Image 1 (tube, helix red, strand yellow):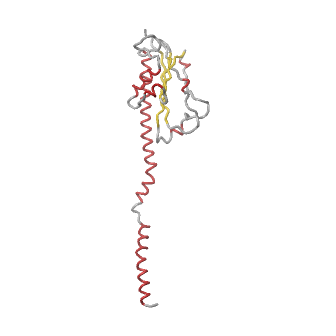
Image 2: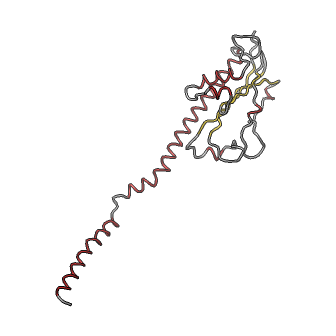
Image 3: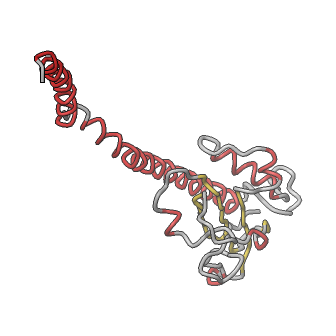
Length: 214
């Protein structure tokens, strides 16, 4: 081997060494470890945070619906709202009028369109009179007795009684959920195809005996 060949060999060796050093340096570097770890944990972390926030908002909406049921139930009990008593100033003979009054009570968080008021798909009202408190249903009407079934709105009525009658007022509202990770798996109220629901069913009930108003 000539001296010229030896020089070229040394030059090639020297040119390869910086590249090997660079790869070894990158392999040992931990500068981006924190960023990679954060990227891996960020998605589940923020999903949990959003689920907590959404659960809190849903709970606030549930309290709002409950307060509206109690308020309108009190108006039925005291005769401020009547049904088929020939009183133009207090009669609400149409459930649409009652649903509009209910929407006014929850408007701070729940907005009802005119289409929703006339043909409900989220907000349902069930107001009926019964012979006794024991006759008031304790369960939610469902479309079937299967383990998972949707509610049955066809059984809902708006026929509150007059003075001294025993009544039940119940409201249902489908509250849309996005990141709630637990509730879809623990509810038995699901679509008819058995798929996981995309909403949280809020149910509020009050039972009372009307005052003997004139």
